Image 1 (cartoon, rainbow, N blue to C red):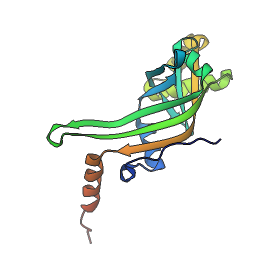
Image 2 (image 1 turned 45 degrees about the horizontal axis):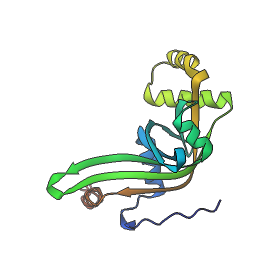
Image 3 (image 1 turned 120 degrees about the horizontal axis):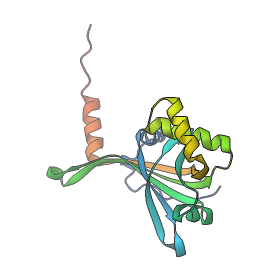
Image 4 (image 1 turned 90 degrees about the vertical axis):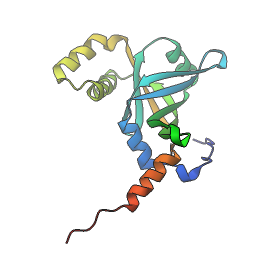
Length: 176
């Protein structure tokens, strides 16, 4: 797949791929950006699961999001891991990841059930019986969107980067 993606302007603040994946694993909410009706941008906040290098989102089988994905599968997805306004510094301490990928709706019922179960475990870690009963009740009307990641970047704001560097320089004394 040939895709051109811009390089990050402030590359010193770039997260590594491993750090980006950690942010995606920790996160619970993100914003899915799609091409909506008549080419208008459409961004929607969602809960998600990052699993096996892909992003999974559940939702209705019909509606604006479903129509947009079926019309144009190229999407963007953004997750904020940290976001603290620091008034004294006229800045924000932040860490975020932006993903560009191709979205598709899962079709295999067993795969849909498996992803719904993993999503449920992440957000409502009740016992498996209760989880399965809930999935059984809603599975007929629930779709699962899979985003295959084509490009991913992460960025950590200057304040968090400086804090991390300062902490790395303050190593605890070695006890002998």
